[in-house]
Amino acid sequence: MQTFIAYLLFAFQWLAILPGILASPKVISLDFDRYEVFGDTKPGLRRRDTSGADITNSQGSLLYLLNVTIGTPPQKLSLQLDTGSSDIWLPWAKSSQCSNRNTRCSGSGSFDETLSSSYQLLQASTFLISYVDGTKIRGDYIRDNLAVGSSSVINMTMGLAKTASEQDNVSPFQGIIGVGFETGEAVYAQTGQVYPNIISQFKASGAINTRAYSLWLNSKENGKGTILFGGVDTAKYSGDLVSLPIQPDARTGTVMSFTVALDNFNVMGANSQNQYSKSNLSLPVILDSGTTLTYLPDSMANDLYTGVGATVSTTYGVVVPCDLQNSAATFNFGFGNPNGPVITAPIAQFVLPFPADIPAPTFRSTGKVACRWGIQAAANRPILFGDTFLRGAYVVYNLDNNEIGLANAIVNATTSNVKEITAKQIPGITSTAAGVAKQTASGLQGPNSAAFSTGSGVIATATGPAFNLGSSTAGASSSNAGGKKSAAGVNSPSMGVVTMLAGVVSIMAILGGALLLG
Ligand SMILES: *[C@@H]1O[C@H](CO)[C@@H](O)[C@H](O)[C@H]1NC(C)=O
Ligand SMILES: *[C@@H]1O[C@H](CO)[C@@H](O)[C@H](O)[C@H]1NC(C)=O
Ligand SMILES: *[C@@H]1O[C@H](CO)[C@@H](O)[C@H](O)[C@H]1NC(C)=O
Ligand SMILES: *[C@@H]1O[C@H](CO)[C@@H](O)[C@H](O)[C@H]1NC(C)=O
Image 1: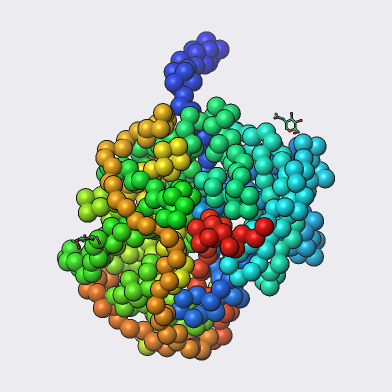
Image 2: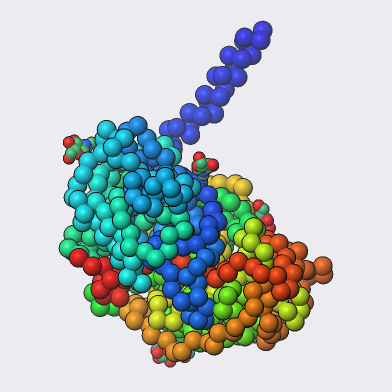
């Protein structure tokens, strides 16, 4: 009897599974981990931030890491998922950064080509990416097998990073998986040639129908998000999914980065009263998962500093009281045109606790614990919308049709309804919000706000918010901060605010390619 029941169950299981197999959409769904690190990841991203705070020494970044294996037998690495660049590069196991006296590659792994039977050297010493501060990463173009989830690519072209000229020798030497346009590859700026990147490889192998993917980062507290190559998960967003044309580079007319037009922005405060608004912006913004924060033109960023009561600290960067995350106010980002999609982001989305094992600074005037502020001034950099913005959005990147599908994300969604993207059409798109923004990325802005000089652990100035953001929820207190509270006057490690510019490669191409040296 038991055998019979087991048999029946087995049969029913197959009946249930079978239609799924027959109708299985051509998509690749990959979960990734949110990971917090100290220091820069992409070498060479150190700079003085726009407030004048020196962020050279150490900082914390939230990265999104995808597990992959490279070679035969497979070597495990975690690569940073980056919509702002287009190459895959791997830290070389024998580089000085990964040598045994150094632990900079211990977290995310490195690649040893001598241990892979499928490794091929494509071109020695020609892989080169130069970053803003002059740091250069050099290495070989290689080919090897890459596997991610249950998908694999034979002969994937990648950079093997052998040397890096960098001052910082403590932060992780982190490999990257760039999922941008092929015109964003480092080699394109050097030679005008491209090679098939990971998305093209997935399409060529028949695993997906369209060179498109959807990115759902999930909440800042939740450690996992999903990238869905070739598909859309209609259970991960609310409201309408609206199509936005990707804006080409104004000089070349070529689509090179995920630039869309920001048309309007407003702050909705207490009792749904408008506190601030900007319209008719035609602002070119790059959606860049490889950038931790969100950058706005200086004047807007400064208006928001004043509005929410942010303080610029030399040591800690731009900080706000952590209890700002209890505000019910929202930032509303309108794209395309006045009738385009609006991403409604609670202010809490931009309040980042200092990493848990760092004593969080406090404000001298109020004793409140400080958090990092997730929107900063772009100064002379392109306008990048990084993770602090992207966590609120469900974004479909359709490279075959030069369009972005945009909707409000449902954070912590537990259900799933995956649809394949076929013949260039994104399922669920309800309308298109046309709109134009000139992407010149020259964007030179005015002078930056003055820096405040403070002692360690204590931030002297705490201004109240100029916006009426509504009263904080009762019980809102410093205990919401992820970091331990440090007593006033106690020395804290020097922490700067994260200003990661992981999209730097494609950005440099936009700026004229001058920083991608041949
Ligand atoms: C990635 O690999 C790490 C280490 O093996 C593991 O802890 C983590 O759960 C993996 N992440 C995913 C999303 O599979
Ligand atoms: C990979 O490249 C090597 C060398 O170019 C070639 O011999 C091999 O056939 C290629 N494999 C596949 C599956 O394309
Ligand atoms: C999402 O889940 C995390 C826990 O994983 C929780 O801290 C957070 O508040 C949740 N966010 C929302 C908007 O439900
Ligand atoms: C928006 O900008 C365009 C072009 O700069 C201008 O023609 C138009 O009058 C502006 N509209 C509003 C409402 O300011």
